Image (tube, rainbow, N blue to C red; front, top):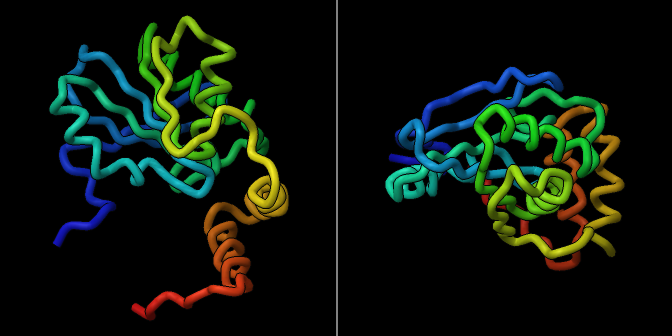
Length: 178
């Protein structure tokens, strides 16, 4: 039985960059136009697993990454949008001159910052479940509250803290035990 964590024909790759290693999944033919996929705040490259093969089949080389502090990419200490976009720009620079960019949720804000900083490197930007500006309101407060948890304890602790916060919501329904 397959799961969302199955990566199809994609191969695991690590970009050894000046700021530290970045874990990735790669699929598609070498030399094909490149699409770089950036996950959301609590996501990982595996979030894109179901679409890697279809993108590669469309004639593109697709690279999905973990941002610093996510799953298999160690944190760099600074988890701001600007710092995370530096990691995206480092990956893009190692891939070539022109890289199509897609950012999901928080990854959209990171991707947007990368494009604003180096517009000539990115011929296109796709925002998936991201707005055109910063996060505010309750979502901003949650990220601000969870940032120290991420810095001190890592992404697994952020997930646990988010689950604990969700359990205090009035309409909360506990997940079925496995």
